[in-house]
Image 1 (tube, rainbow, N blue to C red):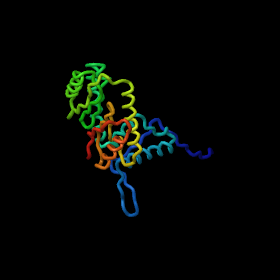
Image 2 (image 1 turned 30 degrees about the vertical axis):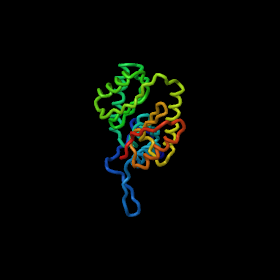
Image 3 (image 1 turned 135 degrees about the vertical axis):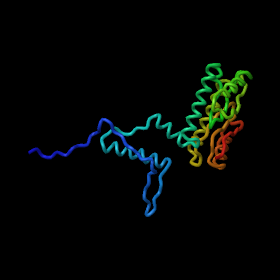
Image 4 (image 1 turned 120 degrees about the vertical axis):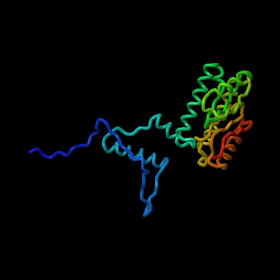
Length: 228
């Protein structure tokens, strides 16, 4: 007689997990607590990873698409708002590129909940007007904030200084535990810092503005961010 050999689990050809649409619940003493939002997301990711390791399957990997979803979910506008703003930005950039390669390279663009902020340095007043006109041709645009400057004298040093200011401010916001930095967009033109996005409360917005004002070489701060 052949000895009974225990079966070694192995990874099947297709390995998947099914999650119920009901909220994930856990016990805390005699009370049941609901885990939602990011807590639920990471709980599901952790469950999938454990299941993968237990069955010998490949580990769960969150690639570029997964990373984008997590970032978008952490913003107040949500996944649908993030996708809509991304589409609006892509269409405006396409129109600018078709109209003028120089316009596409000189004008900055930020979109938040259909509100379009334009920054940068136009070669003349006509380019400034055309950039705004083309924005209004895109479906979903609710507002165009025109902060484009007509400036033919700016050079490489000016652009480098503006980039340094934006980078320094982004770093400050990222490491400030009282600020949700991913909810704010930053543009700097000729030492002027433009802020756009959503703050959870007035105190958070005040901290963002104060960080911008205290940076060297900042001429002024123009705030278009709003409080929920």
